Amino acid sequence: MVKTRLPPFSDRLLDWWEEHGRKDLPWQHPRTPYRVWISEVMLQQTQVATVIPYFERWTQTFPNIEALAKAPLDDVLSLWSGLGYYARARNLHKTAVLCVEQHGGELPAGAGALSTLPGIGLSTANAIVSQSTDHPAAVLDGNVRRTLARHAAINGWTGQSAVQKRLWDEAESRLPKKRGADYTQAIMDLGATVCTRSNPTCGPCPVSADCQALLLDKVDKLPSKKPATKVSDKTVFMLILRDGQGRVLLERRPPAGIWGGLWCLPESGSIDSLESSLGFTLGHSTALPAVDHRLSHIRMTINPILATVANARQVKCSGQRDWIGHSQLQDLGLPKPVAVLLSSLNNGEFE
Image (tube, rainbow, N blue to C red; front, side, top):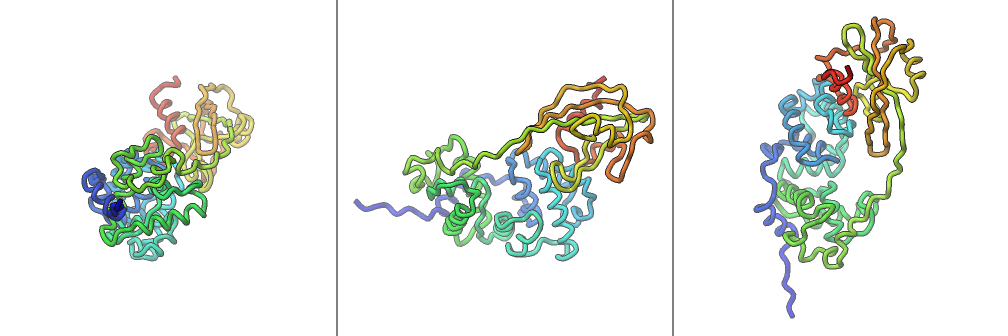
């Protein structure tokens, strides 16, 4: 019996993408380096459906690198608010400033130069190159890792360096000679819509005929799960303090760490330490229902306290602490639970 020789992986994938792929994503029209860069960073850890409205608002406000570089960081974080992993937004801003200062307001050409910039790893750099120039370049986002781990039956967690090396080899060996932009989108689409983490639909997969995981009945076992991350519990008190003008006291978080660079309610592990930090005794205050918030490695219980102070000068204010009026809140980057609490306050839900 003569074995039928299969067409190259890339040919089958591109044929499938022509009929089933996503061709109306906003960053595809046009596929400029800037637009691809913004979309790739937003898509890290975030699904396409969530990213689209953020991307559209972002590119309307910051249509190019120069506009982004000139913007105050607060404006950048405000537009990012709700997407999470805020270091991504800070790195976008840092990179834009560097590009204006060192590259004439443009992203540098070539994956090597791109990957030296804040927040741009090799996969993101290659995605920018392939999608904006049509030159084929290997990418290895989460969807691609999963697809290749199954197709080549690569055991182990895809975040391990040895596994990643094998995945890079597999990714590069499958590249077409042309149509880099379409191929990059196609392999990401395959992982997002067919070779999904749970319940993949192997029947319509264009490369199922030589998928080693399918042939070995290991689709549900590959890729190996990420080792469990130790999750800690944290309980904090957050103070919603209003002054006589109805303003709320907020403080900017340090650049690194949880919610880095965002504006937050004064927070501490106890009411006593909050009072010590602010330099006054709360007196009459109202304990509001606790709010549960989950971060990647922390289960946080937030105990909000509502209080008022007649004169704002009674409270210690530093360069990182300020009284903010309701109309100013929309211009600040706020952590999601803080934004929810302040929205409830402004809607009169705590009266």
